[in-house]
Image (cartoon, rainbow, N blue to C red; front, top):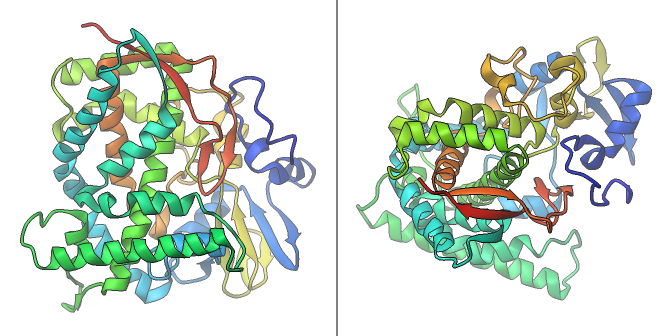
Length: 429
């Protein structure tokens, strides 16, 4: 394990052996699907797209979410989409889906653009002709600022500190006491925002206001979330949104810095679509075709999560396998995303043209999941990434800094262990 975690000697995109070393080794011995034991728990590793599709598309409760570790559970809360099951999950899904539909996300674009503009102006103010930035650090802060409705203002500082206080122990150590305090203060901050928002008629399109809005289901019954449920959904969207977009864009910028031809093609598309001065708008999104391919290829090579987990609720048949109740399923996303039988002999190479045509199989690439539990914030994450990338390409060109150390790390998400250091230069038009 220690060997896999060492910095890579070169910038390669074959991350599976680093982030899922057990699967990389055992799959060579036992095939794509195999059973292993994690202590007393049976775990079935699955990398067959047909079986993965069957698991993720199921909506009758045969495959449930696995239990999360105490830190992650505390991070997202008991009443958020990540942990809920059954009818309660369905209610939350209906309410949160109305907040993140594409038309709603498009309404947030002007606010996104203004925030990004202010951020990039700080980059412009740097006096050097060429300057170095750790874009992973920069993008985490920018993503937190963009989260709609100014939710981030309440939780960013305490929430980020909470993330840095990870501990799996329950003892009242100094670090754990700080973590508990930060979690309590985060919840109190969001509660205060909820109470303030409930008394205001302003900004009804903000995320918080939308989560507070009722939803009338197909039976005509009005459904709404209580305060504790809204708090946990706010925590979920803050942490998941901040991490997903920051990591995605960090890998995108790294790949475009490594592949200058694609950086040039992406910039040309942005300039043809928006010009050098006009800022991206909702009307421009459909014209970012190359950018969509670049984002999809990046998500294939560096997905937000390296695997998805489910647990069987009863004895069942999966493919040609009889799977007992209580078996954990590890859906090996990185293995599928780098499978040469699916993607060809160059599966580890960066080639956005793979996505010029529709996918061959629904589960051949599933960075946001598929089926009923597909990421509810997917539209927001992709639109945000496109707007940020377009505005960066309008202003700057970039190359990899000599100080960059390539070390993809599996944490809550797949992230660069030592950041992503790039050298930026201003683009002259």
